[in-house]
Amino acid sequence: MSDNDDVPFNRDFPLKPGVVDDIRPGVRRILCNNPSPFTFTGTVSYIVGKGNVAIIDPGPDDEAHAAALLDAVRGETVTHILVTHTHRDHSPNTARIKAATGAPVYAEGPHRASRPRYESERISSESGADRDFKPDIEVRDGETIEGSGWALQAVATPGHTANHLAFAWRERKYLFVGDHVMGWSTSIVAPPDGSMIDYMASLERLTQRDEDLYFSGHGPEIPEGPRYVRFLIRHRQAREASILHRLAKGAADIPAMVPSPCKRRRRYSRHGARDLYRHRPAADRRRRLFRAGASGRPGRAWDRGDGWRPADRRDVSARVTFGSFRGVRSTNPESRDSGFDAARRPGMTNSYFFTTFG
Ligand SMILES: [Zn+2]
Image (cartoon, rainbow, N blue to C red):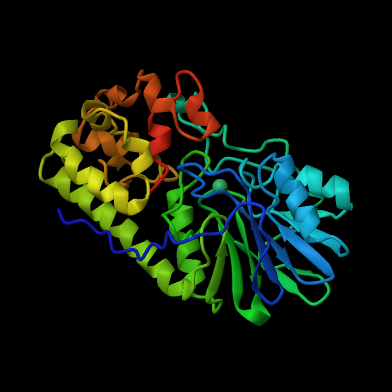
């Protein structure tokens, strides 16, 4: 089955942590020093406006980053704090910025899962969630948050998390997309926290809007946003097609379905996920076939290239018994070396990592 690696990723992002980057009139960005295979070079926080400003995504629990943000707005007034979603690399620092500025916090709501967990998921894959976060003002889809000299419309974009919002500066045709769209990689969609069905619908949604410059939670800005999003949609659709193709051809065990390690390594280097694999033996890589629900809808499956994942138990039963998938639970401590807290938990399944990139 042919690959579909035609998403025009851009990993050119030389911004250094703590440096205030005046990227457009009324838009400044500051990189937090929290690089990892999941955050790329780190979380990007944005300052919108001049004089009376909003801060979007204060970032992880990181004192130095909070200080850098507050330094950047010295002499100005922070009137709003906006949060795209409740992952630990985006929202925890909100408490510090709020304590320092008194600004109210706007977000869709506290963290929540997209669907109930399956029994097999009782080891939470949600430890990347910031469960302490609670906005002062819960923002609904389409509502506009007005500041002085700027207005940001909330665009509900569930998928990466159920409560994910993008913020559109409509007048400028800018969209602050959080983790819904990233220029350097595809986004993590890890159920039950995330939902592939919602994610796809949220991508479609952006193609109907006229904002064309995207500012992402990680990595560089994305010109021609809707065009880029169409690449992402096609990429996921091609993955799905390749999974169904392999199933139809009767590939029913893991080695039969997973391409050779060499081929995979090449592909990951293009996806920017190579670090995850570099030190792992091929046999360990090959075990990473796993299930990853897509909102429980039967008959669909999603793949990220290193194998395939039936969307839920019902899909598995179509061709392979669910028991085949138990092997994906790795006991190799090396496989927990990701930058994500969740992945370091004892007993954490590998599946969590590998629902991450798509
Ligand atoms: Zn996130």
